[in-house]
Amino acid sequence: RDSGGEQLHVLGDEGRDSGGERSVATMVYLISLQNINPAPFRVVDEINQAMDSTNERNVFKCITEACMDGGKQYFLLTPKLLPDLDYGKNTTIQLVFNGPYMQQRESFSLEMYC
Image (cartoon, rainbow, N blue to C red; front, top):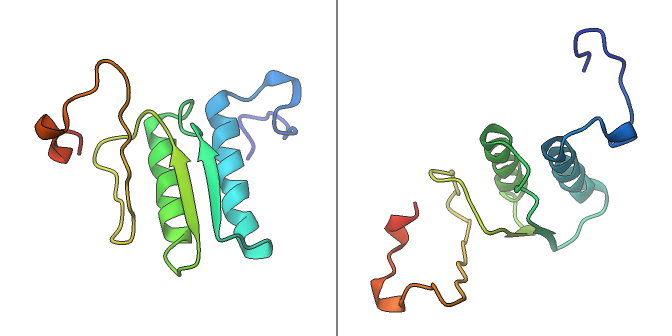
C-alpha cells in the first residue's frame, strides 16, 4: 500500500515496521500457507502481544474463518485475549493458570473474563 508517497519496502527492512505490523504479516502468511502446504495444526506463541486491538480482532477473525471448513487448528499461546472476541461455534479455549496468585478453582468463573 502506498503510504503518502512512501515506496514499498521489504518487511522488516531497516527496522521500519512495528512489532504489530510484523505480527499481522506473519499471521496472514501462515494462514495463506494452509492452502498450499496443509497442516493439521499450527502453533503460534504470543503473536498478538504487539498488535493493537483492531489488528488483533481482524487476525483472530481470519484464523476463525480459515478453520471453518474443518481439518485445521491453530493453537494460540498468549497471556491475554481481548474481551468480546467472536470465537465461533467450533472454537475451544483452554485457560491455564499457574503461580502463587492463581485463583482457586471454586472461585473461578469464565464469565468474569468474557
